[in-house]
Length: 224
Image (cartoon, rainbow, N blue to C red; front, top):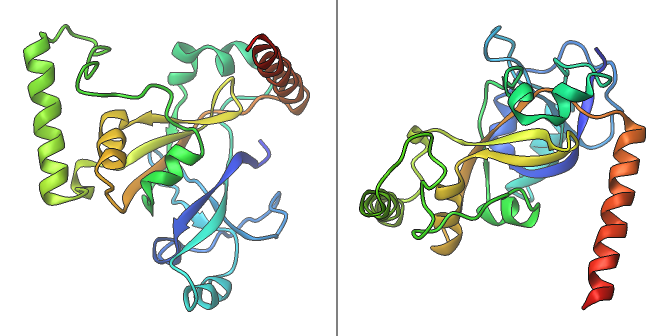
């Protein structure tokens, strides 16, 4: 399959990009700007750097973060729309990268990656098992206290961003909704994220979906 790019770019910490190996195969990369290719943790294929380390070293003299394009090799063909658009089917093909990257929590909020804001009131309501209200509140409060007192704990695992998740073209937070809300509320300066993917809708469908969204948004504005 051909290399695909996510619809969004991300402000990633340069130091985390510099530890990546350089990609041996750059076919499909336009060669403009900083970019990474997400690997496959299951098969042992590492995330790698598509752009040059020399450029990153130069940028690091002036800044800590850099706008980064994210590429991946789909494991689901673009014509396989049922798998791409139905979450339960897509989940079977979800493929994780190998590295994590530091970002500001506000970056995740700004990119509108949070599909469902988790608060103490609705914490763990969508768990696969029933959790009584008192237990839900206690779990959230313990998590909040730990983050406030100790800061972001990378050992608990990064937040996971799925590339082309919503309608198979919009990136979305795959897990970590409780933690990101706490970090935003308490101004935690930095979190870690990793990327996962399955596939990406064909370009003509993306254009149709984008057009439909614009029409829907305009209709909602007209009602107000």
